Image 1 (cartoon, rainbow, N blue to C red):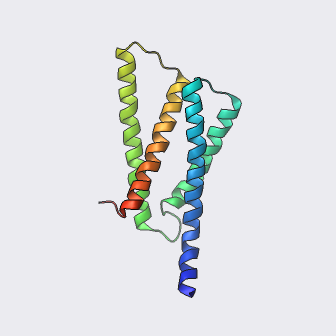
Image 2: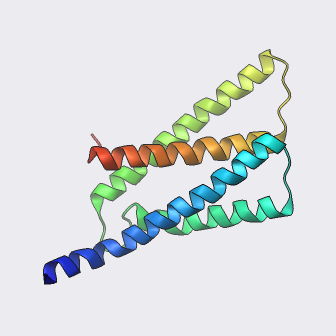
Length: 138
C-alpha cells in the first residue's frame, strides 16, 4: 500500500500537467475555430490565445518528463509528438500557400493564424495520445 502511495505521488505532477495541457489546448482550439470562421481578432480572443499558450508553455516541459525525476519515456513521447506536430504544420502551411497562390485566393492573416494554431495543437494532441496508447516510440 505504501508503494502505491509513492507511485501515485510521482505521477501526480504528470497528471496535473497533462490536464493543464488539455485545458490550454481546448482554449486554443476554440479560439482558432473562432478566428477561422469569423476571420477577426478581438481583445477577448487575443487574451484567450495568450492564456491558452501560457498554460501550454508552463506545463509542457514538466509534461514531457524534463522535471525531476526525469522520465525518458515521456521525454521521447513528448518530443516525438511535438516534432510530428511541427512537421505536419509546416507541410500544411506550404500546401495552403501554394493552393492559395494557384487559386488566386487571398487569406486573411487572422484566418492563417487560426489555421496554424488549430493544426499545430490538434496534431500535437493526436500524436501524443497515439504514442501514449501505443506505449513506446520506435
